[in-house]
Amino acid sequence: MGLISKIKDWLGWSKPVNVGGSPPPPTPSVPMPTLEIFAQPGHGKSSYLWSVLYMLRKMNLVWPNYLCSPRDETTEEALDGIHENFLAAHLPGRGPEANQRRYHLDLENMVRWGTRDLSVWDWPDPVFAGSLNGNRPEKTNWISPALWLVSLQDLGQVRAETLDMRFDDLIRTRTRQGFPVYSRPFRLMVVLTKGDAIPNLPLRLRQYLKEDPLWQAVRSEVSLLSPPPSAPAIHRPLDEDEMRVYVGTMVGIHEEIRDWLESTLVGHMLIRRAAANQVDLRFAIVSATGSGLVEGQSLRLPWTPRRVLDPLFWVLEPGSTPRDRI
Amino acid sequence: MDLESYKKDPAGFPMLQVEPDLYLHWLPVTKIQFEYFLSDAYDRSFDSRWYEELLGLNPRVTPAKISPENYWNAFLSGVLPAEAQRFAFWCGDEYRLPSAEEWARVYRILNSQPTLDLEGSGLVDDLPPRLRELILRTEDAAAEAARRLGYVRRLADQFLMRLGVLEWVGDDESWGAMGEPFPELCGNLAAPETGEPLYPNRPDTVRLPCLGFRLVYVNGKF
Image (cartoon, rainbow over all chains, first blue to last red; front, side, top):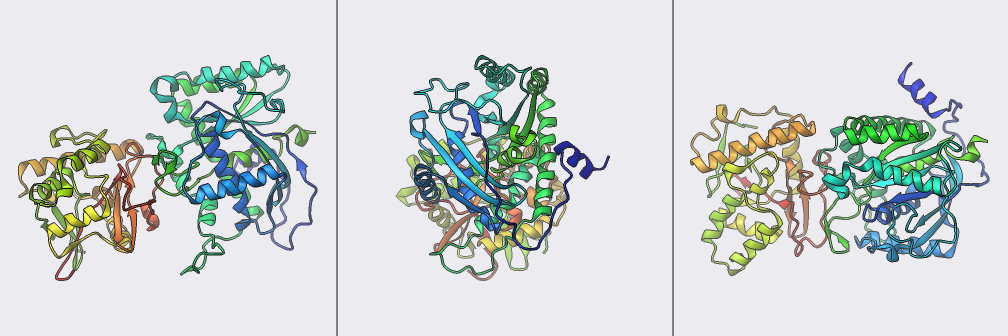
């Protein structure tokens, strides 16, 4: 089986693609259930969400008919704050109290995925938080795909060897909350955060982070008040074909990460535990800030988020949500 | 480019001719190299407290103890652009920090060349034993570290323009940083092959543990 066929088969789609032509007609927004993100404290959840929201606002640079709009006043204020903090190279505050927010966005006319409604919490999660610090007003969504953010560097040498047991914690919490593994298969995306700081990261994965075309597009943005650029912007729109290639590359990266992790005992056990629990594991790697150079609550180099939208793209792929499966 | 031709800076460290009128330090400036300057400097700002602060960011290592796990400790880092300029001034009128464009151009040239056999090339032949050991051990350690990460080395990698430190480039108008630090020294996704510098926030005041420098020697002009 050829690579493209393998990718198509793996993704479960083979729909013909309409390339070029007039902008697509407006499509009704498909409500996506709340996207759950699990992470141990300090593994970069708030920074990750900031970088995702920043990049989502900017994707019009590559999707000309796309719009990203906050769906409520709280999200609008949060987006303003995130943009200011990005420009000032500030980081999110530390600790759960500093980042208890719900972001609710309308993503219109994304190439490949159309119009979706995104809702995500930056809130202590029921698996890894030391204290839930007050319940959020919405229950954990255990049905749809979820992200598990893991910073290998922050785990350290010893705790990295028990990563599979943290996975067990997650599955046990899900079961305790009424979602036994055999009744509902679970799709979990393991997102390796702070990819820039993983010292023995395979070269191809490091290159993948370096060569993020979406970040390249965003960094070439011309702002209203900045001086005119000396050279024209280098970004160009990404059409259906290019997004298909992008997703195909994501599949390759997923396999590369899986193979790399599986070459270690703990990674092998993690993958085995997932299979035993009917959990469909996917892997992605991101760097929310682009560097680990921090001074207090500020970055010493500007924010340069890399590949941070990949996990969201995975979730948007057909077959990811129960609604898609119906 | 004539890689056969090289000269030494006032501390005795080799600089290779990379363009007809341009020489580049073989490696980022090392602590041992900078210590020659410190022993000469009459400027009070370069006192022992200043040096201890830098060593706190990136500790010292003796040539005999250089390994793939610590070779970046041999380089001076945490230095501000003005301090690097003071070192260049001490070296002489023809020495200065490279511009971003020069650094990127030289990187492309060196990246198109295979690695050198250091001992066979004569580069280290007439160096004092301690310098010779520093350069050869750094080369061995960096080559092994690069191999472990899967990098295929070119001449630019022997210069440690990748997997070395970030290096100050530019001038008083705009300070940038080129190069790719070893990931264990600081998390980064710097890509020198793009030719685009990084621009640290507050370059005149904030010391970065992975930010060092090297100099160019411009033949016959400043």
